[in-house]
Length: 282
Image (cartoon, rainbow, N blue to C red):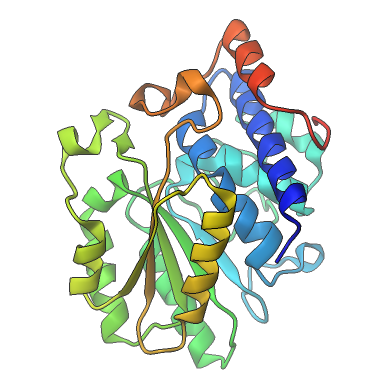
């Protein structure tokens, strides 16, 4: 298991990257990005069997990750850069003209670490299942991971994919739902109640588990390692991870209002004062 102190420092630094990137572009999605920081740091710095120096779109011989809720690209880009996929100096180009760091990840710019365009919600689980099936056909023992928003589960394609995977024995897949209870128009319970996500996926034939504290680094590590141990047993694995929208910045926490709003100069300063610079700003 990776050094806890280093991972905690990474979480703080990644959160600084997120608010600075979104502020610099005057647009973007800080809330969900901040809430998923522990997940991304754990995944890329502790769990994934990857080699950023030899990235290719082909998926042979390493673990894969697919971001379905592509609007939380700030956290994705920060972690990819700090993991060595591309230079940190690109982060300030977020959402700028001719940048490889578009608001939603795309593939035609050839950004290392990104294998599929995402942000059209509801599609990522289907992509991840296809990649997992390809690994099985190629006798590749590596795993496929994916991340989804809870509001995204209101898309019908998610449930078609959820029905397909258990019936095809896709047991080399670990999907995670970021259950923060918020979406662009308000609380998920107000827009379209999701009720018990775990029970839904269990009923569809998935092996489900819960991470109750998705902004607790140790809890995320423990939960994802438990998910790894459940692979290879005939069922896909679904992790329901409860997080706080805007975690780490007090005025952004727990509200949909920071789903897709950039902080102004004063708000940025307030946010940065709450987040320690641990590994150097870009």
